[in-house]
Image (cartoon, rainbow, N blue to C red):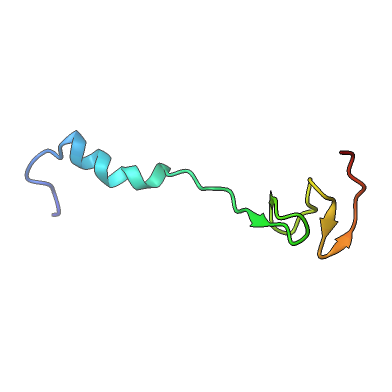
Length: 60
């Protein structure tokens, strides 16, 4: 049977598990019109453009 011979230290256990809880950085792309960062496949909240077309009128 595969039984550990010695107790695993908490440091070793935590090092193994540390990669599981990493936070994901949100994916951001630059807007082709104004250059500000926005979520991909979304209308730019700064200028209101999507796919090189004015889609939403933005108050500034």
